[in-house]
Image (cartoon, rainbow, N blue to C red; front, side, top):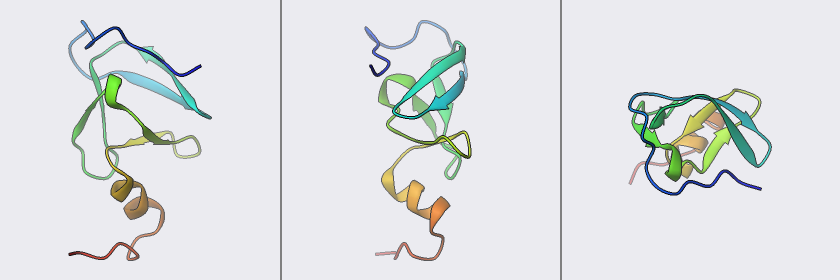
Length: 76
């Protein structure tokens, strides 16, 4: 079962998260995590992309590609 939230986190600041296969566990409560590629904050309720192996989050599918296949993402 994926983490589900009733709304935005009441805890301000950055969360510490353990990324698992198909799910994640909040280790230290917070409102967001940061994208490992772009450094933009990702609200926990919007977190969809992460790497279990690298234990990092990504804001977009493009950020995932940039991390795992640098140089393969073409600029438009």
